[in-house]
Amino acid sequence: MSDEIFDEGALPGDGTWSDEADWELSDFVIDEDGGETEKLPVVAIVGRPNVGKSTLVNRIIGRREAVVEDVPGVTRDRVSYPALWNGRRFMVTDTGGWEPDAKGLQQSISEQAELAMRTADLIVLVVDATVGATTTDEAVARALRRSKTPVLLAANKVDSERVEADAATLWSLGLGEPHMISASHGRGTADLLDLILEELPETPRERFVAGGPRRIALLGKPNVGKSSLLNRLAGEERSVVDDVAGTTVDPVDEIIELDGRLWQFVDTAGLRRKVRTATGHEYYASLRTRSALDSSELALLLIDASQTITEQDLRVLSMIIDSGRALVVVFNKWDLVDEDRRYDLDKEIDRELARVPWARRINISAETGRSVQKLVPVMEQALASWDKRVPTGRLNSWLKDIVAANPPPARGGRAPRVMFATQAATRPPTFVLFTTGFLEAGYRRFVERKLREEFDFTGSPVRVNVRVREKRDRKK
Image (cartoon, rainbow, N blue to C red; front, side):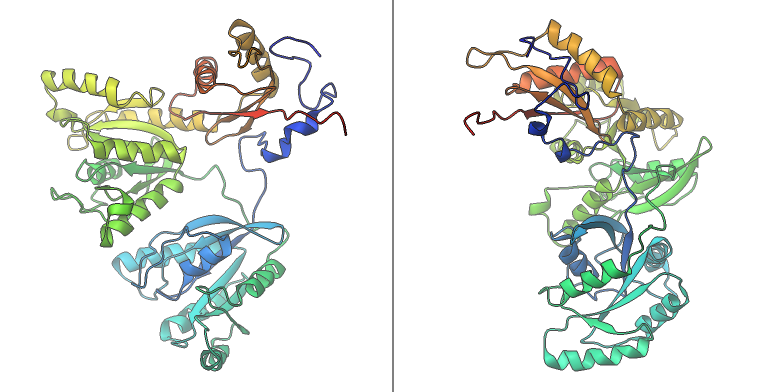
């Protein structure tokens, strides 16, 4: 084998790299078209408030993701999570409580639940067996009986023989056998999952298509102008605005047409403190904000340009960086910024935003409408970077030149060789370098910087991972 730092003859799939199995390529999902690699069926968990839907979702996905609380109405958004059972993957959608003839906030929750019903491949109606069938449960059942989507009835909170007898009365809902479970203790959930797999179709109804409205999260500390920006973009009062910080508690979803294209904006609660130190509704507002970010594609980080960049601003920025979402930094209230403040702000940006030199920055005033129209092209650029895929051939040709001109530093007297690279994923762009030895963090940052210079990932994070080839035991 060549002693060159970069072995151009060792590309995956060309038959020249005899030890290709050592790289465990299956650990990485190669997404050649930049979209989803498969269509996953969708299971919607629906029911009235506080019957244990989120607890069941957590049980299905095997971790505590959905927010759970004894107070009804904690779940407000329709949020989907990947799940795996007996080797089969699917999406499970947690919904807010479904209420017939709902008004206001409850109406939007009901609309989200109804949308989940229309787009799901299977519906699981959760009913509280300790309460029995309520008028709301009966209304939901009537709607589901008219639906063409398969339905399973889950009688939750069955923790004793007495409750089992009570659950038998749920046959009256006309949805077939009530499957008795205790989502909090796990009782019966494995059997329910087996039934879910039996009922799921081989061909899903639809996938989460990239052609729909791009989902944009508006984030920032309280009173930074998120709701004002949403109203400005919508051209009307869609979100409550008040000078009192913290007016917005729950994420507010709005689909808005800008420049002939639909966008889905989510106005989130301002984060005052870390989630682990927040209490009460502030705690749940923080969790919903994080959930809104996780389900978004791009984050607009709003910062009050008229004030010093604060620890709260940087905390939100860290959350966005950790999420891997595309990012645009929006300095709002620019109409309040004078020349002295501009000078100070430039220094603050150099110091505080050094972690995201790749993020586009834009100065606006949501109050007056100044430069708000410039947001669309900036968002489009960031999302295009987030979706971008570099062909493997072009990537390796470029990498060969980079490594030849700037070889990785030696460790223990021997320099590692970079054998080849591939882009393992998009959203965000994730690259894997296959090497014969460890690459220092500084060299990985160098590769990331060069990737940005060559392929232009403005507005998107770029992740560079290293897979070191394990030495085979030649004595075997």
